[in-house]
Picture 1 (tube, rainbow, N blue to C red):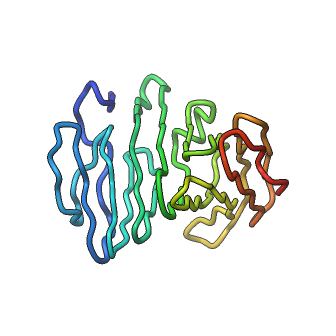
Picture 2: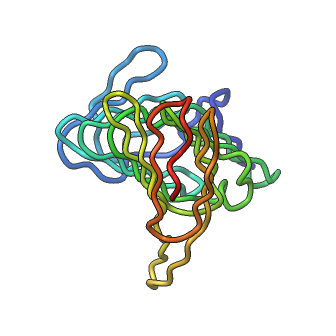
Length: 186
């Protein structure tokens, strides 16, 4: 039985790759330099400076955060024994690549990725988000490939306050300039 959430105060993953510099800010205000194998918790804020990092979550979700980017882990719950799970992330600035893990495969409605202007609904796939300094968001759907080189394309929805688009073809992209504008047609 594994229940990992903010209330359990357990590690939900760790830093698996690091090039350059960055920090994780905890809810208690502690700021830790990023380093390989550093534990990650719900509500952590990850900021990269002149560096990039990858985080692998316990459900095999993976996020890659490039230079001068900011990602907030809003919530992570994973309990495979009771078939429960949920993940909410906020890509606040820069470029973040997301690769679905078990939560998105088993509980796709419980995975939400936020940007300042859009909400991305994940249907078990990979995508990248680029968030500029004023919050405009570009989202690109990517193929998911396994270690044998077999690739498939899932589906994501990109929603703003004014509309929604569905993307289900590799390398489709959309942009949301502001929360009150519709996402561009893919």
